[in-house]
Amino acid sequence: MGEILNYFETSGREKVDQTLDLTKKRTSELDIENVVLASTRGFTAERAFDVFNDDYILTVVGIGKERFNRNLRGKLEEKGHNLCFSEEVIKPAQSKNFSNLRVKEIICKPR
Image (cartoon, rainbow, N blue to C red):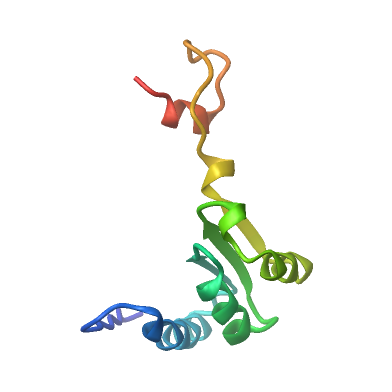
């Protein structure tokens, strides 16, 4: 399996479709069915939803539910895709000792 790299001179929304098309091509070649992507408000997630159709399972990682498009969130969940928001995953630890903390709280424990 050879490594393929694509570089863009600039960044921005105009690169999302091209990036997703390249990703779909490569995931198809490697028989990958799960795609993880970041999307703050839903733009990238919506484009991925259109590109990958029902052939893939998307895991969308966002910052917060309140920022993410509510209608799109429902559409993704209805089709069985995964949504994960950092506010749900990372939170300050509420304890002064490690004995009763979950892993994510230990990682985020303030000093």
